[in-house]
Length: 508
Image 1: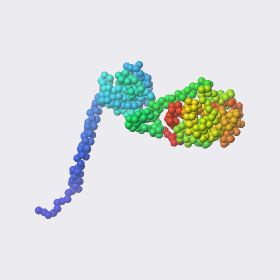
Image 2: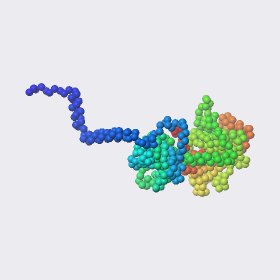
Image 3: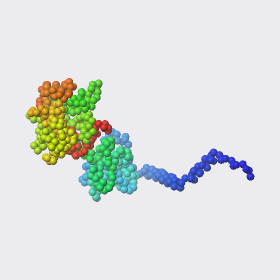
Image 4: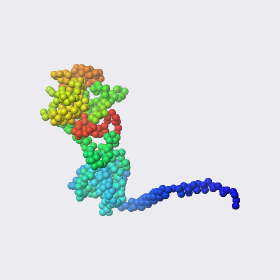
C-alpha cells in the first residue's frame, strides 16, 4: 500500500462538495417553506394560463373593461342619455340607466356575485353584478369589477330595481342590476388617506370609544395636504354647498335692493389702508401689494355716482395669525351705499349694545379691558357668553367703537369724537361683520390718515376723489368663511376654505 496522501480534489469538485454540504445543512423547515413557495408560484402560473383562453373566449367581453384614454378624448357626442345618481328613486324601477361615479366600496360575495357602490357628489347607489348569460354578465366580468381600486371612476349601464330590504349603506333606496361596466380612470391602489376614515363624525368616534374600539382619526394637516380626497366626504360636500348658498343669498338680497355688483383691483400701488401687514411685490418694477380689502375702491365707486355697490372677491391679509378664525386669503362680502341720515338699520328684535356697555359687562364678569382699546378673541368669546346668559341670543350688534381701534376712514361720533359711527356683528361671540359710516370730506379724511401715521401721498388718488363732491355713505365687510364656520358650528375656519392659505400653508 502506498504511503502517499490521496490527491487533492479539483476546484470544481470542491465547490460541488461545498454546495452539497450547504444543502444538507439547510433546516427542514426552510426546505418546506421553499417548496410551498414553488408550489404556489406554479399554481399561479397554471391559473394564469387557464384564464387567458377563457377571457379571450368570453362571449360578454365587450360588456366590461378599461376604457383607453383615446376613447374618452372629447371628439363626438354619442347621444347616450346619462342619469344622475341622486335622481334615482322608486319611479325609476325597471328603467335602463347609464351612470358615472367613483367606486366607494367593492364587495365580492362569490365568484358569480359582487356589489359595487358608486358615489356622485353626495349621492350613492348600490350596483349588483350577478353572473348570468341572460343578463350578459360573466364570471370574468364579476372578477373585473372586484379588482377596482377604491375611488376609481366607473361607468355602469343597468336596470334599476327595488331591493327587498331597506339599504343602510347608500343614499338611494334602489339598486342597479349591472349589464355593462367600464373603468374610466383607475385610482392608485393605496390612497394617502382612507375616505371612510376621513368621513367619520365625532359621534362615530364617541360610539367606538364606548364600545372599546379604536378608529383611525385623520388629522387636519393631513386632510389639507390631500384636500382633493378630503373634499369628497359628505360633510365637506355639505359645507361648501352651504357656503355657495350664503354667497348666493348675499348677492340676491343686495341686487333686490338696487345694489350694483363691482370688481375692484387686487393688485394695488402701496398699501390700501396704509398698514404694514401686506403682501408686497413688484409690478413692472413698481412697488405694489395685494389689497387688504376693497374698501377704498368701494368708496371711490360711490364718488363715481353708483349709489349702492357690492363685491364678492378675495381679500389678502399678511398678519402672522395662526388662529382658528384667521386666514391670509379669504372671500370678502363687501357692500357700500349712500346714506341720508343714519349709518345703519337693524331689526328691533336684534340686540344692539353700545361698546361701552359691552366693556362694562366684561369688567363686571372679572375681565379687565382697556376702555378705549379693542376686544381680543377671548374677550369677544366671553362677551358672547355673557350676552347669551343675559339676553338669550347668539346674535348681536356692538356699536360705537373707540376711534383709536377703527380704520382712519371711519366717521367719528357727532357727540363724542373719541368714538365712531361703527359697528360689528357677532355670532356665538365671534365677529362676522364689521361696518361703519365713512368720512366723505377730503379734509377730515386727510387729517385722520395723518393722525394714523399714514403717508397721505400714498393714497392721494383716493382722497382726491372726495374733493369732486362725495355723498355721505357707509358700508360693511363680511368674511364668508367665518360666517359659514360659525353658522355650521365648526371649530376651524380652514374647514370652510376649500384650499386655505395661512402663514404656514401655500399648497395645495
